[in-house]
Length: 213
Length: 138
Image (spheres, one colour):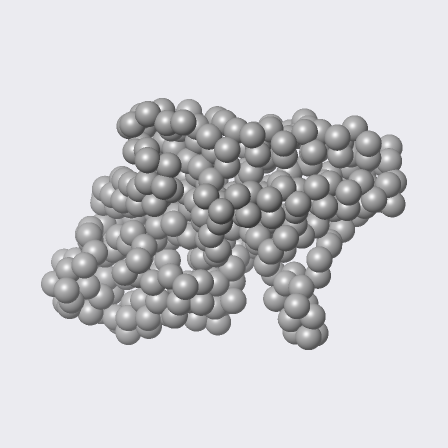
């Protein structure tokens, strides 16, 4: 759920990184946190981690500066990817404004990607939302493993599985090396801010860059 | 969960209710957040970074506790309280979608904090109800 405050002229949005377990959602957040200057990002908060698995969520607040007269504040969250933590995923998805789906390029993980994507739509439906009503960006992670001895799915195959009608923007990425992380992040921020501001400012006859009451 | 547009008037009103709560209860910090973890307003002494983390964690904590409540056939627990050695935190439901978090130390008492929190809740809930009425009539 987005919040627009007309006193401080701020827009707050919530973006969730979703996807199967061990897909690289947390790595995305760590890379974003490292890549951005201190004036933009807050502290990365990881809770309840046992080893390298997310049990509850990671959280990264950011201040993206101003567009028009509005200051844009974004909260990034990850969900736990493991199948059994669906209640926690529902909790983190509450009030989401934009979604990055981080798919795992390993061939062995193909079914996990598809299951997780269906699970995303199921959980959104509980809130009266869906992947077609929200800004969604797909990321095909672990592309750095292409050419190694591990079997990796071609991006075309992944598109067929997850994005057959090309509804969503998608990016190949290696969250570990940092490739594609920034592109994914920029795209989802742009889409979310435009979506939220169109929805909330239209009623008031305003636009992001237009004048306000 | 609906989006929330806050006008300057309603934010000023919320701030004044929260400031009164602080003055009367002896608590040192109070936050109003939504259940998605976004901060709506805060009064007191705490740095901004910690406030964002607190909002996100509290919403998750509250959600987890609600899931526990449902295991026992309860709809939700409407208030939570964490007691520390020096600092205590009191969480309270505001309507369906918001939470109020009050932080206080041993200079005041839980009973007084709860009493003042309840008064403030009534005022904030009345304000949200009034906003909703105006929105429907607009």
